Image 1 (cartoon, rainbow, N blue to C red):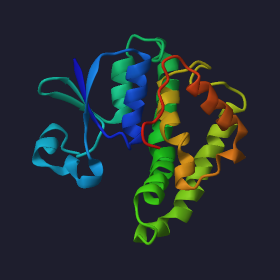
Image 2 (image 1 turned 90 degrees about the vertical axis):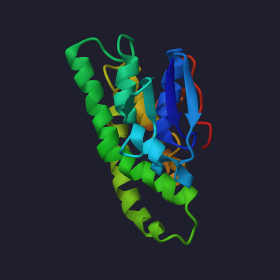
Image 3 (image 1 turned 90 degrees about the horizontal axis):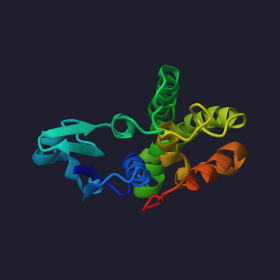
Length: 201
């Protein structure tokens, strides 16, 4: 059985919880307290030297880090990971967009505003995070104005990757009401079979 090391506060960990639920994959969940430094212990670093969650234990001694890599691994052979070459590339295109143009701003703004004190120095980062995060939301709005989902017009792990932090972007001060197509897509994702919400939002 797979074992997942994750944090219920983390959108990246939530991606796995959602996929595992929707594909009904048996697994064990190990909660990791990232706010107390549990990913920096020698024991955890021996499993993932990058010191981050989520982390998938495929079998004893074999670990796969990085949320989007884990999504691809777990979705292999299912409708959520396209079988055709173009479909896979298009799915990866949006997953790379999530990691490079979306998550560094929307997720970080959420962390700063939700988990750090109001007088923390990192609050100074918020205006820049908002500027870049709104740019990513604009790209998503343009796409979703013409398509129901992100890759191949069908629900896929690209949607899971982008949904995780988008649907709680309000925690970081983003006004999702500006983006009606994004809001409608959030509703479509939440209506998928075996959907589960982010436990801590």
